[in-house]
Image (cartoon, rainbow, N blue to C red; front, side, top):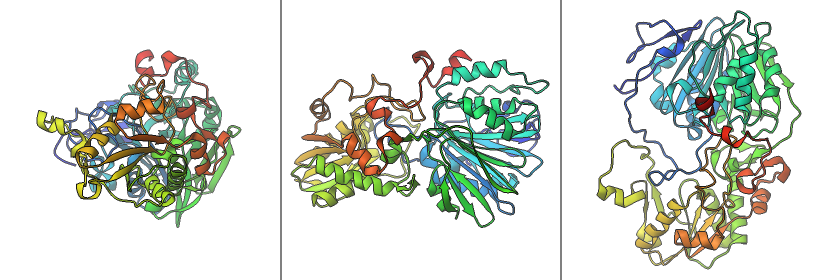
Length: 526
């Protein structure tokens, strides 16, 4: 951590302890009082925003959980979250339990910014959960960072969530009607996330254990949710009946791990056991793994996970993400061939598909663009001169590779089109003779309400425009998308087992009324 003020939260038996700049003299009171305003700072993250204000598809959150007596579970969780950093860069947190108390620490920023050795050493226990957040319900503020905490009739609860519920407003009304007896319902929490709402529902059953409360409340949730949570003695995981977001179970030598992606299992040395099934609830304690189904499974895994969201070294539903993306590239070369000299990717997300395109087309693969891996958000305002350079701070061409060449430029998706327009212009300025853009997903036509923060439909470039119209807009010599059927075929998964809503508008889970679909629904109505 640097010397900038940061927020600290330590929950011990339901009390909050913290100080602005050190882990020291306790301040005891309401849990969410213990924080100070953060000084804005750059984060150095590698992201998809190549142009200022050009927000691409924003990542889903990452969740991690471990039950491992005798292991340093907080450090295992830290490294698990590190592997999941690509799924959320706004905030991070870890909760641990030693059987008698639950400790929670969370803050705004990257995993590496939030945690130190000292902090991790303070998080004792044999159970831990962790969360890396990108906000899809509730603003990006410290109060909404996860894990979220609740005091229950039987102890304590901490919970992390990947996904986005579609019946948030309905659940808020349900919570208000529950009879909690003497149990305090909100403990003065000002959070406005659907995650905090889930935690409150699970905690609002004084006559039930957490396990019993989960089997009662999980069927009422609608939308996407891959959950990890813990009480004083047990690690829990649950996945929505559609299985929209991924969730995997792994085995340690002396314990168990649950994670959003298998890459996080790899980094902590856990062997992959299986995916948590859609509609499944899992409890892990000294008696092993217990599994129950709280809903009939109706698989609808997110197709965009295979296109962009997941790490290429992860495996989802038995499919290697890198293998799927390379297969999509090969399919794209068949569906949208072009007479060209070389194939180059838009790094990093376009690389596997570009490799596949080159393999299928017989064209040479080359690195024509170099991405600066250490440039992410900066709060230093650029001068006019630097602003005019646009994306060159993050992406720079290699003239000796592309000069005089007819290029096939492979990227994962087009959202607004501004990034591709800037790239095409930059490549021509660097000497490219022709720029042929190929996209390893179909046109993005609809926003996602299941955990990806896409642009609104009005901001998307594809609705209402032909492919040739888009080609003209971005300044390419030609433009080709992989077909939806081609993308699905490359995954090897049946069409009716995939959520394709951002491409075809068929939403597998009913959406809330239009006025209740905002990420700020609980801030507006709550």
